[in-house]
Image (cartoon, rainbow, N blue to C red; front, top):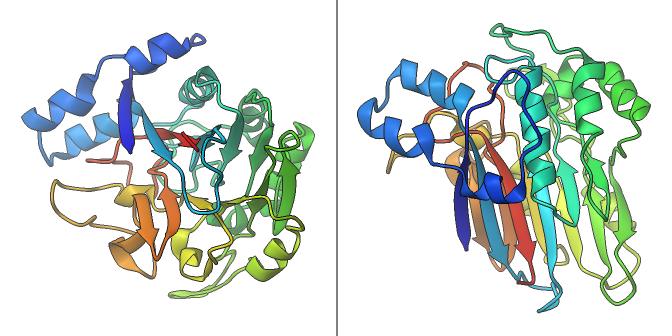
Length: 307
């Protein structure tokens, strides 16, 4: 089951947003402007800059105990510094994520903008300090994305290390109270090294990561690129991914124009179920390649398991 709520445009000094205000915010441009200015570059730029939605999923996937409720907030693809993601906007995203009050928060990489459309330089320390404000009872955990690897991985590691945000690379941690425990696993990036056109070398080790799972408790897997899903075994209850931006430019009833995946639109966005295995792909927050979003507004995920 999927729900979507809208969030109002940012202001220069974004205040903390209440959960009630967050979930009851008006639909704004997301619902109305698309009917007035469909497919225009002007609207696509506004959608990227002014919209923020909360997309909710409720599911009980295989190997997840019925009635064992867990809420997860997912922040993916900030690309801080892009035309829709200055520091005030990043602050708003963090406030919105905290307002959801989830048990766990995961951050799925690509922390800063690397394209030529950067309109506000957001230093590593600045976006990292905002990420460090995330709070959840079971913790906040992060992974790295391909842009982090391609454009200064050491600086990203240092920034997250300075603010003590746990970074998971081919690792797993057992969380929760006895009788309600689960494993959270984080995979290394699958295209960390660019070798040439359509040629990459990853630092991902899925078998090694799952070897760290030493009990029968259910597993939630964080990945940046969703392509690894074809190899994820049934042992994993849920895989959560980012990277694709949902296609970023997406017209109604038409596959996305652009999907950075070897599988095209197959894993571009949303809740995907294949052979009983479950994947949720976030539309993310920032922009890549072009400073536009159309049909895929910036979003934060709110996932409820066992509901």
